[in-house]
Amino acid sequence: MTKKILIADDHSVVRLGTALVLESHIKDISCDYAENYDEVKNKLQEAKFDLLILDIDMEGSTFKYMIRELKTIQEDLPILVFSSYKENVAIEYIREGAEGFLNKMSSEKILIKAVNSVFEDGFYYTPELIKQFSKHQHKKDVNDVLSERELQVFRLLAEGSGNLEIANALNIQMTTASTYKRRVYAKLEVNNLIELLKIYNSSHNIPKK
Image (tube, rainbow, N blue to C red; front, top):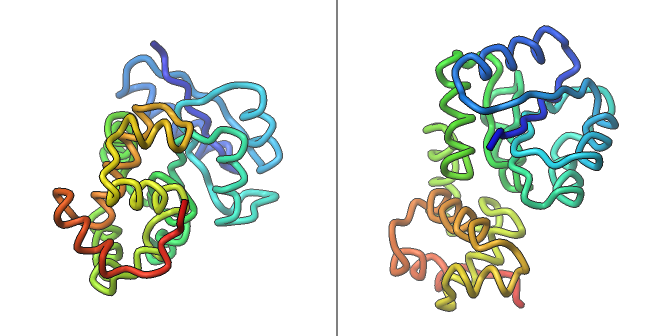
């Protein structure tokens, strides 16, 4: 099945260049375009996309607040932030629910890797992002690392829920629940439930049911 990618950027060269790279190296994809934030919202209301590659500096941008707004239009939409900003601002967007953050100076190889990672794993975190997550994780400040939905999944995992139970509790697809679980594990740098429980038991202000 063909995967649909929406490339949102106010520079036509970036839009077309990104599409050319992806369509030349990834099979069964089609790219559509948006040049401002209003057009992004309109496109998402008109059709379902498998990935949004989002420039955060386009006309009409509300920066990190765009992520939550776009998720209200299509909750399971993977968003890869594509920006000229350095990765020290990335964690703000990841916490809002973005699935990854990629600098525009990245190579074609990294761009392809990022898109494939989002398709296959549900997220793309660079080594630098993992270091930032780790700093917060060591402080047990999970509220600064996980998005609101990820915090809900974190709590349910700690309470012993499996993917099916999480899916039912949050009214999401089981595959989506599995993706959230992988993202929580990756952000907190844990490999199993025991390690996750250690963080949960030492954390405070985790949202209740």
